[in-house]
Amino acid sequence: MKLLHYTSLRHLLFASLLTLISIPVFYILLNNIFVHSIDRDLRMQAAQLPSTLSIIQTEADLRLWQELDNDLEIKPFDSVHFIGKPFTIEKKPANGQEMEDFRILQKKVQIMGKPYVVGIESSMFEKEDLIQAILIIQLGILLLLLAGTVVINYMIHKRIWRPFYKSLSYLKAFNIDSNSNQQPEVLKILEFKELSSSIKQLSIRVRQAYYSQKEFIENASHELQTPLTVLKFKLELLLQDRNLSNEQGSLVADMYREIDQMQQLNSNLLLLSKIENKQFGSEETVEVEPLIEEVSEDLALLAQSKNQQLKVVSCQVPVVLAGTNKALFKIMVGNLLTNAIQYSATGSIIAIKLSANRLQISNPGSPLGVPADNIFKRFVRHNKQKGNGLGLSIVQTIASYHGYSVSYDYLDGRHQFTITWAS
Image (cartoon, rainbow, N blue to C red):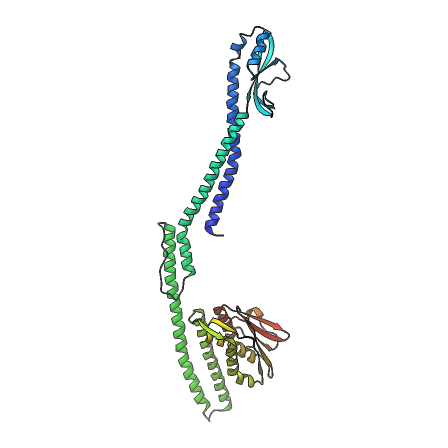
């Protein structure tokens, strides 16, 4: 959920809750106000009863008074049904068809020396209509206020948080190889100014660290390559010396192999660094099958030395990958085939199967001596006497660089590596 939606939703929930609570509360308060107003009018009418009663002398006068004033109900006093406070009842009016609420105030009086109860009533029908109209108006105002609050809040928040989203877009599009330090413009808000400044300083420091690391790796690789080459050359000269004993020759040969492995390790580490730093282009179009045949021919002598056979099962249709670096793809396939040759027994058949969206390379062998999840990690080797533990790590790095996925399975006594791409 976006931050803008998160805050807007909270405001909307609060405003909705406030509206739902305010409507019944407002109705109760408004109803109480009207009831108190009617009760006040009833008491005022009750206060005028003595002046009216003073002119009632006969039963005829009493009946005439009741006929003239429809809001009065006069009946003999009954202490059981007498209620001293105003109360509400529901009944039909004299000229109405539906039941209505009436507010009644009973007053005990003496008429011609006899106790009577005078009930003064007032219809609450108009009051209910008025309350209903006021509630509808109030609800409309609240809804408009709610909608206006949400819209204004959304627009204000959207404008306020715009620099944040621009900074976020800048970070998403940040390219460490680019020298552009352009920052999104910000409003006059201290927090966003500090954020923009921090992002700018961070991008500068990241680039400096990146270029320093890149320069160090390249320089270290170059500086190591020269003395290793010199050492190999001198060991080759030493091996040609006829005065060396068998034991000395064996030691020199071991040193030669170790230096050769150091050269390969140096080259592989440099290759990994260049791939991770995106120093290779990926705008070529690669025909996969001819490339596999080319790599197979390059490694044919290595396979023949172990009496192994490289069996290629081609796809029925040409497989062409766009946006691929041919050199890296060749290294990836070569590393998988080299790994299969090295870890397969003499006379094995190494299967290479190509389909529209995947490449599978499998070879027979015993189960791994390391967890399958660690096989693509650097310096993890199944056989400590073979390789430098970077071949499969390079395969995974190249696959990730191109957006491919690489997986490993052990099925029916065969190691199977699968590279999958979008068809």
